[in-house]
Length: 114
Length: 109
Image 1 (cartoon, rainbow over the protein chains, first blue to last red):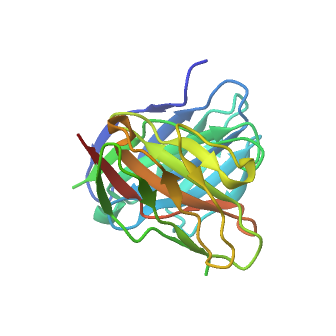
Image 2 (image 1 turned 45 degrees about the horizontal axis):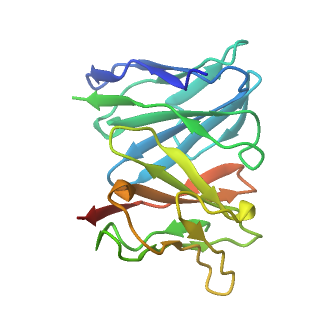
């Protein structure tokens, strides 16, 4: 079974721009979660999608948004980029709730904002 | 606030020695706790969860509600155990995993 695939692996953007990250979950997984990882804050939950609906949301500004398609693939968008958005963005998929099925992580997209 | 604390950023032990990675949590409800591991150049992956009460790769973790801890232990460390370890708590209200800052474990030969 193919693992969680995130594209692109690396991105360099300028302040004020916007960016879209993509995540393809493991086949059959309907839940996709996004995390931001930084040296200072560690792993922070962004949001979770299940069957095309945002089910949960973390404490991030509205500049961070996402969506999920009918094939469970998910995209995350960050608008008006700030220097502090530089981070590794991890996507994770699971069958359903974390308590019932483990999270499977992708390799991440490393975003650098200059 | 719900929080997971891993007091050691770095931990270094010799091969064959016992290893203990500390994890403390604060949570008002009944906690569901996990340990995730990231080996060099690999993805973050689930190591074990307390509800399973299983031993994975020789590691065990016991939930101590009195001390609000979920320390990860292994009696005899091996070089392949070198990795980044994250303790995580399932926040039932917010329906999200709350991660600790992680501990980088290095096993010296």
